[in-house]
Structures are given as structure tokens and as C-alpha cells.
Amino acid sequence: MAQSRESAIAQKGVRLSEALKGEGLTPELGPQDRLRVVDTLVPLIEGVYCHLPQKRAGYAADPVQALRLLRQRCVEMTDGEFHLAVTGIITGLRDAHTRYVGPSGLRGKVALLPFLVESYGPQDAPRFIVSKLAGTANTPAMKKLGFAQGVELVSWNYVPMARAVDVYAFQETGGRRDARRARALETLTFRSLDYGPPPDELKVTIGFRVGRSLREVTMPWRVVDITAARLGKNPQSALRAAWNPSAESVRKARTLMFAPETWDANRLKTSTGRSSRAKVVHGRSSPGNGVRGSARDTATGKPAAVAIGQDLETSFLEVLSARRVSATFHEGLRARRAEVGYLRVWSFDVHDHEAFVTEVDRLLKLLPQDRLIVDLRGNPGGLIWAAERLLQLFTDREIQPTRFSLLATPVTRAMAESEFNHLELDDWLNSLTDAVSTGEVYSKPVALTDPSWCRDIGRTYPGTAALVVDPNTYSSGDLFAAGWADHDIGPLISIGEATGAGGANVWGDLQLNDALASTPYAFDPLPGGVQFTMAIRRAIRSGVSDGIPIEDLGIRGIPYAPTRRDLLEGNKDLYNFCAQTLHDTS
Image: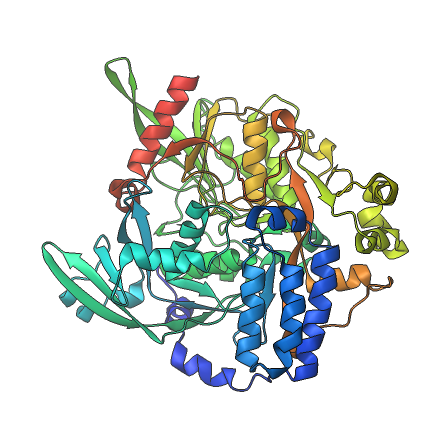
């Protein structure tokens, strides 16, 4: 399937300098508006933000007091100074669930450079390369310079590369250094303008190495339009979300730039309600001549054969890909080659968890039935139900879903007592009321996913499976990894120290405004288009890790450092490592 004219136009976007001209039309907040913003955020962070005790203890910082001090001087500030100050306080929580979004004319857009930077090697001595290059950068001028996939980057705006990444990491969320560095790499060339300011510079000068020579290229930031995530379109799903919406916007922009055929096929499906017949995947495409539906060999009844590396067709083409891969492992001194199933779950941003789980079940039956790699790297989360229901397909054990608590305060108690919130919060009401006399900091933990939903299908994949995660596996991705580890489903392989450590159910200002509307803590919509998201219900693990929080800790596994071959040759060394781990632990 060739790239369409629509995706080619969408890839180009506009220069950041042009996009910022529209920013001047965004109204500034007056002094009274700034006071309203602070007066809204203070009681909500103090009364609803579920990680406040942990953040105060872990970072020796008090965002509530910081906002109160800001209130004393915000009237004299410029608009830019005020938004920068509020953003700094909220970012200091190191929580990608909890974001402040100032007024902007750039909503629904992502600023980008047309390439992807990834690192390989040990954490204390990483090397940085261009792992993907968009078609818009594959120009004669770039070719003449030698700027191509695989070149090693040595500087960023004349700052040594490792130092530049650390500088960006300091401004990022994440409770661990490796998580902040991973998010810095993610935002080095892709930044969601829904959840952060545009880049400070209009252009970036990149130093790179070709052979023994050092060269440099200057590229302008461009801005592209990105459609809203699915969770925002379904009120019930939005209340059961656990995700990093900024990372989800970036993921969609990467799909547009590096897998435009996927973007095209998803656009066709959205506009017509029909799936494209082309099989597309993030980073590659192939003709639509592979396994369709539940294709099976008529003689054996087994799944019909597809070529190794060829992706199966799926109705969830933007969030799932599945194929057979070849891997080598050692049995004693003997090297053995094996076919391994590979399932990539790019995101849990789905509103129909029933259809999603059914589709994963179908794909699993078309893969090799003895060995499987489940890859959640870079998964920013999404619908909690979709993630937790999926676990049952891989194990005979009874899945106990993650449980969630509310901070026990007068605000959350009033919210739970409201008759309009009984359906959503009634399970937490009694423990919130009891906390008045017991002094408990949190309500009792209650699962958001009905436990019976985690057992209604049962195990369908009969073989052994390994899960791969990284520090950008976040939120519902954390929940899936926690369930995998706590129910001992199979080996968990971690790039970096652990998953991204997003341990909460997140609500936006609209959901929180509705929940508090009939209480003494109701607040008016914020002025000037200001928005925020907030971690509302704190996640704690179940099973063998019962009671351990996920926030700032994440889920640890067997460590693995990516290689250059992984980044440039389709994860070959990672596949071999997973196959060896499955052999050694089976």
C-alpha cells in the first residue's frame, strides 16, 4: 500500500515559526484569572491528588505551599512567567498523570523533528543514534550530508549529546533517573503541545559522526495535527483511564511520520468504518496478502502459515501488531533456532475492551503456540479494563486486578457522598467516612476492573511467554506488567530499571468538575482555556506484591540493554535474549 497524498501533506505540517503566529491570538490571563487558577488548584491538590503524601515524603517538596506562595506574587507576573511557574510546580511532582496546561492556540498539535533518537549500550555510557528517519528528511541535501538512519549523534545545539539529554531529563516527569532520561529521549524530537509549551528554539543544530568525520545539520521544528485519543470520546472510559495523554499524542505523531501507511489505513477505517485490506505496522508495510480473520490450513486445522516477519492483519491496526519471528537460543553448547510468536501492544487507548481482548485472542491463535514475546515498550497506557482483562489469556492462575484508593480528605468524602457519584464512588464511601475517626490516610483499596471480567475467558495461549517493558511503559502498561509479575505468568524483561511507574487512575478537569459539582468544593471552569489532569485513585499491587504502590517504583524485571543491532535490525538481539530466557526458565 503506497503512502497517500493526505499523509504526505500531514507529515509536512507547518514550520513552528508559522504556527506560533497563531499563538499571538491566544488571550492572556488577567490578574484575577491567575488568582482563580491558583485558588482552584490548591484545594484540589490538597484534597484530591492521591499521591500527595508520597510526593511530599519522596521529594521533600510541598506543591500546596508552593502554590500558596505563588499566589502572593502572581498578580505582578507576566503571563508567561505565571504559566512557567505553575508548570514547574506541577512538573516537580514527577507524575505524568498530573499536568497543568496553560492557554494555547496549539491544542491537538505535536512539534517534531523528522527523525527518532534512541540509545543503546549500558545506562552509564549510552550511545545515541538516529534509529528512524521520516520520508520528509530523506532529501538530496540530507543524503549529501550523510545524515541517515544509523548515524551517531554527538551534540545537540552544540551541547554534548549525553549532557543535552540529561538537561532535558531534568525538566521531565518520572520518579527515577532512567525514567526521566527515557522521556527526555522521547521528547527530544517529538513534543505534544497539548501538555507542554512549544520548543524554546525554532531550529536545532545536530552534530553527528559519519565514519571518522564530524558533521552538523540544522533542522527547523515543524508542527503537525494529531487527532484526539479515543478515551476522550467516551465518558465512562475517561473515568477508568490510566495513561500518559502526552505520550499518546507523541505515539500517534510517530505513526504518522514513520509508518504513514498505518496512519492512512487508520484514517480510512475512521472515516468509512471499514478496515483497510493493507497490512500495516509501525515502521513498515506490506501488501494485504497475509492471514485474514482466523485463517487455518484446511488439512491440519492449524493456523495457516505466514512468512517470518510478516504481520497479521488486525482490526486494531494502530494499537496491535503480531507476527512470527526467528530467534536463536543455546541448549548447552548447542545453538538452536526457533520460531517465536511476537505480540506488540502499542497502546491501551481503546474504548471497546471486549473487542480488543477478542482480537488479541484471535491473533494469539495464529502465532506459534509454544513460545511468545509480548512487547509493551513505549505503551503509554489507556483503558484499565483493556489491560487487566488481557492477562487471563496467558495463565491458568486466577487474576486479581490492581486495586485503587482515594486520599481520605473532606473533599473526597464529599465527592463520594454526592448522589450523582454513587455509581462511580460508592465502594469507597464507608472507608472514607471511617477515616474521620481512624485517621487513615487512604480509603480501602477497591478494584476498578470487575474481577469476574478477568476470568470470563480464561487461558487461551498454551505456551510460555515473556513480557518486555521499558521506562516508557506507563500507567495501564504498568498495571499489565504488575499483573504479569505478581501472578508469575512468565519472565519479565526490563530495558532500564523498571517500567515508567505511573500508579493511578487519572481524571481531567472536566471529569473532576462534574464529580464535585454538587458538593461544597465545586469549582468553575478555569479561565482562558486552562486545563489540567490529576491522579485521582492510587494503584496498589495485588497477588504476591499485595499492597505495594506502583507510583515512582514501577515493575522491575530481568535487565536488558538494547544493542545497535536491536535499533537498526529489528530487535534481533532482544528476540534472542527473550528466547534464551524462555528456554532457561521453562
